[in-house]
Structures are given as C-alpha cells and as structure tokens.
Amino acid sequence: MNALSSLLDNLGYGTIFLLMLLESTVIPVPSELVVAPAAYHAAGGHLDVALIWAFATVGADIGASVNYAAGYYLGRPLIYRFADSRMGRMCLLSREKVEKSEKFFYNHGATATITGRLIPGIRHLISIPAGLSKMKYPKFLLYTTIGAGCWHGILAAIGWHLHSVVPAEQLNGKILEYANEIKVAIVAAVALALAFFAARALIRRHRRPHRRQGGTCPPQGSHTNGMD
Image (cartoon, rainbow, N blue to C red):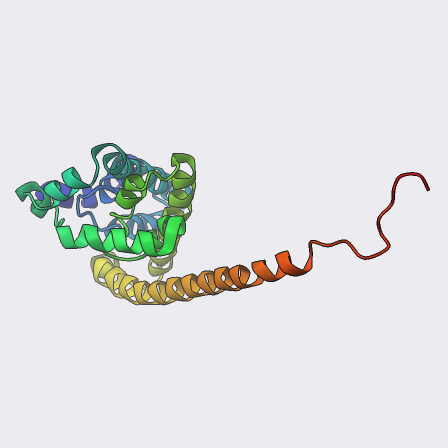
C-alpha cells in the first residue's frame, strides 16, 4: 500500500501506464486517483493530457489482455480457484465478483467489453469472461480500447476542470465526489443503451420472418425466356 501511495504521489507517463495496467488485471488500483490527478497537473503545464490519455488506455489494454489470456487459456476452474484463494482475497477478488462479471457478459454479449469498462465492480474483470467465451482477440481489443478510452477521457476531463476549481490538497476528495456522481450517470446511460440495443434486436428478429414470407416471389409478368 505504501508503494501504491508513492506511485500516486509521483505521477508520470510510465507510472500512469503501469498503474492502469495493474488496474485492468485484478489488482485494486483506483483509476480515478490516477488519471484525474494527472490531468489536473497537465492543466498546470506539467504533463500533456493527450499523452496521459494514451498511456492510460494502452496500459488498460495490456492489463485487460492479461485477464483475457487467463480466461482463454486457464479456464473457469482455475479462475474460480484463484478467486477463492488467499491471494485472490488480497486482490479484493471473490467468486461473487467473477460470477457478476460473467453474468453481465453473457447477458449483453461482446458489447459488454465496451459498456463493462464503464461500470464499477465490473470494469477490471469483464475481460475474464471475454476470454472464457473465446471472443476473438482483435474484436476484444477494439472494444476494450473504446471502453477504456471513454472512461479515461471522462476522468481526464474531470481533472482538467478541477485545476481551476480546487487547490491540490483538496483534489482527491473532490475527484471521488465527481467520480461517484458520474458513475451513477454512466450506469444509467449504459442501462439505457443496452435496453435500446435489445429492443432493436427484438424488432429485427420480429421483422425477419415477414420479409421471407412476402419478398421472395417475383411479380407476375416479370419472367423472361431470354428470347424477346
């Protein structure tokens, strides 16, 4: 924990990359207290906010790929054995959390690797069921990049904004306050998006039989024998 505090106190591009890599595995690193403070310092001219976003997102991609590979190659029994182990508990992991991420993935399909990156408690574990389901890696990486990029962009915007609002000593408390409010909004937005896609899929499924029934026969008089 002292090592983590030291890293958080000395944020640079390499540190941001490393911490976001760890956060996307099973190690409990709060991304809110990494990307947002880094953007806060960027607003003061000490770092570049675009590079912060890039290093954070690439780190998240690599960390998520580790979880994906664990699910893909190790399989469910070993994953759950680790979750039940002492080491798993030290990482704040549990069987219930893994089951929750699996349920979310199988309920919402591959797009869960985008939306799941925005949801607390699922964000760092959603890559495991993606690996367990043998989701194609290029698609997984694309969706993970989109989801992680959106989340880091939100955090960077918070940090940049707070530079003109609060002094440095009040930063972490204000970040957590903003982040909690945004998490609620994101969860609501994700729920609406999933409901929209589910409704659209149902409508398409309902229309498909009607198209097959009414659109297969050519109109009368349209046949030719090629001799006209």
